[in-house]
Length: 222
Image 1 (cartoon, rainbow, N blue to C red):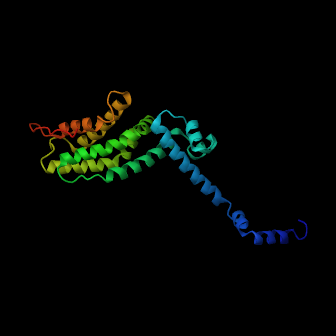
Image 2: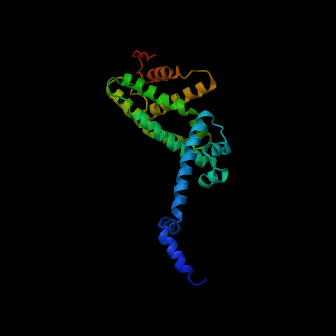
Image 3: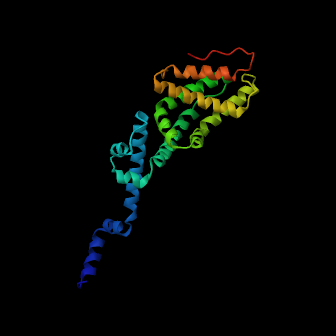
């Protein structure tokens, strides 16, 4: 190294401490870029899949403003990306459903919970459809756990109050609620049911299933 080179480098670093800091910690900008890329990919994937469950990885990369190599650098497979998207959208869904008032008459509370849940399912049904194709059924069930916990607590309260049947296993009734909601989403996607009709249809179906034999089935809200 020519004489004075080290002295000149030291002087340059002293004159530009930000540049010196960047050289000293080269990993930080890359980590920040990686976080931004992941956030952009997940947001783009959620939006694209909500419109079309068959959206390709290349289309998602383009929507996120990143290259395919960058996308695959963070998510090696489509299943891995869908796992992350499912986690993201279900966290948002849980926040929406958690705000529902489930006090008072259990049957009225069930109708309110169904209506709020349907708004989420309707918005995300294509994302869920894509996830169901790639991920195990148990993972799909786990993604719904927080919402299903609320459903279970409400059914238990309704049983204690004599509003809901107690002759069938509780886990069966909780699974029934989830499957009826998914069936409604499939019917809407197929054009056999409208989004506007779905909440009352789901609520009526669940109230009929939850009412004890011999009791009058209450009418679901229109």
